[in-house]
Length: 287
Image (tube, rainbow, N blue to C red):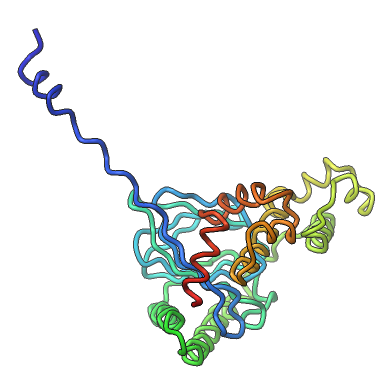
């Protein structure tokens, strides 16, 4: 005969754990020189796979923390830091706490930070600088207020100045990143043909190298396979076109994806939401 405790448990089974809150995303392209995109998001369980951007990623985390790998080194983002991830260097990202994280990101082009500073940013991307953290937050506060673009630009100018001070103070100590010639030439080929794409056989003919050697050289130099790099670049272009109001179907055709479903699969994997939802948040934020 079942015990009283067992009967009670059968009558009152333990409550199922509460479902994780859905991801929330807001993205837009402001009228501020040098800002490619503003991206605000909350994720609980979503993890970014390895990918690259062609812009600088300036990141602050308001709740929780993110754990990520950059150039084969693990890093983290407690809420009092500013993280600066350089372009062209693969990274990933995952929640470091059970409650996930809420972040605000600025993607900045080379007019704000030049590619010559990439090496200095690779080893120590997380900056413990309370003044910088406050100034980045002030930029975001201005960016969400329509009509305050000049304030955002002014505050971002001070942020850029302080970031350059941090980076230039370590330039002499920054080790040279490995960038073998063959891997670099393949990356240049992929950059030239983001939309059209190319096969490893075609690349091998241009570079006089066996396809398997190309994959090994590229993956060894950059920590990401050539196809992952190419898809990252395509998704980056798709983000900008979607924020310009283009439909996902048109964007898929214009960025090298086979069809909209192909775009959606890779976009959701790298951004955390579908292209349609991303486009809608951009329209709402920009409207």
